[in-house]
Amino acid sequence: MEYTLKPQEIGCLQTILDTVSEQGVDMDITLPDYCPDIEKVLNCTFSPKIFTQNLSGGQLRVEGAVTVRVLYCDSVKKNVRCFEQTSPFSAGFNVKDLTDQYGVITSTKNEYINCRALSPRKLTVHGAFSLYAKIIGKGCLTAYGPGEDKTLCTKTRKISCMELSAFCQEQFTVTDEVSLEGRPPVESLLKSEVRILSSQCKAVNGKIMLNGEINMRLMYLSNFETGDIEIVDYVTPYSQIINCEGVTETTVNHINVNLMSGEVRLKGDAFSDNPLIVLDARICFTEMGYVPVDITVIEDSYSTKFASSQQFTSMEVLKSTIPFRDTFMHKSTVKTDGASITKIIDMECTPASSSFSVSEGIKAEGKFNCCITAVGDDGYPVYIERIVDLQRDLSVEAGADNIENLDFFINSMSYRIAEDDSIELRCEIVMTGCAQLRETISGVNYIEISEGKPIEEDGCSLTLYYCDCGEKIWDIAKKYNTSEDLIISENLLEGDRIDEAKMLLITRI
Image 1 (tube, rainbow, N blue to C red):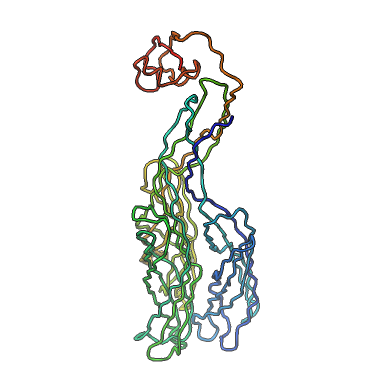
Image 2 (image 1 turned 45 degrees about the vertical axis):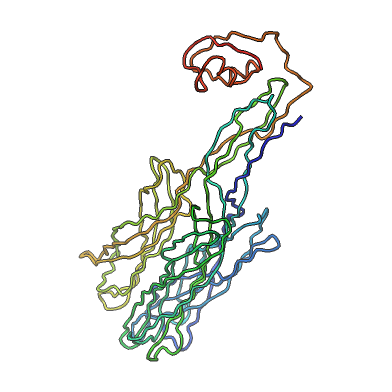
């Protein structure tokens, strides 16, 4: 006879898909007639943007475009010029075992790029970027507690853990117009970057109030003759109210705010009295809300009347999860490797990677790209790109063994050109994530009681047992087919272990 256990379902985060696909970038670029010839290529980059991510028919389809931007020194005025060319891309991923509630998170990472000038007007570009696709959903773990059969003795354990009670995902667009009134005119856009800064949320019953900031950084040529360059650094605040069933004021909220695409364009005539820069940013927001729960698992069991057998299962539960936001200053020195510079036109630092390691505590490591457009001692523009390393000992909950969604951004920075032509850099870093503690637990998930195989009685209703110090009362009760509670009450014991060697009275149920 199968013993009926009491199932306890616990909501959990399930990873349905976690994969990466390399996308090639191959372009032959011919400059249009309005662009001057290339004297020297300063920098060539590409910016992948994701427009749509559709899941249907067991396949995730991701559509987007990659823009190749060539920054070069022209052969006429020796000024910084720029040319861009865009090409679409698409990728498909097979998906199995989709849950009812799920979210798709996609991102890109540039791997490498090679740019070669075939002539003053022709370039060939070859490179690749990684397209990351992850599907997460609300799943379920099942733990089993004891049923009602009084002839079955069960040893149980109470476990406190975190349950995923709320899960939602929503995409939205942030649009803003930035006036350039009072600034020099825009003759040519050279470079634009869009990135998400802070993102914070407040939960009320069934709703998330999301607030954050988007940084738009723009470099443009204001005078063809003199080569004057202007920098626009603008922060756009945004807010969004998102419906999310299951979220409350007490929910522990994990959020993922992902920039899918960011577009910057000039609106109207650049030479008008009030030219406008238009920002369009598409954002994907994912919410995971947790609440504390207690579950009971069966660690061991036996029947006092019949032969019995049991099966075990193991599962990983989330013991604790705490979002954190760590702000700190990071100093570093960027070497120019012999490039003598007299003036920095623009400097931009963008995150490249992040990871963590666990030893006595948790140490976060990261890399960011430092991209510098400057003027050399010959008066011509130069471009320098360096990788900067950072490390940080995280002050998170003691015992945490995992960091979920570790990320960082550069909130502000300052720099100084040193005497040896190196650049002393000082950055305010904001690092975010969720510190977690996980535990793998084992419990009984199936019990079979053989009613046709009764346990043979030895004819003794009372047994004297000489036990050793440290013996478990449960093990003694199981050996003599009686109950742990009966041994404790008959012998006036406390706790679940014998504190000293003694004689016990063992009675049957």
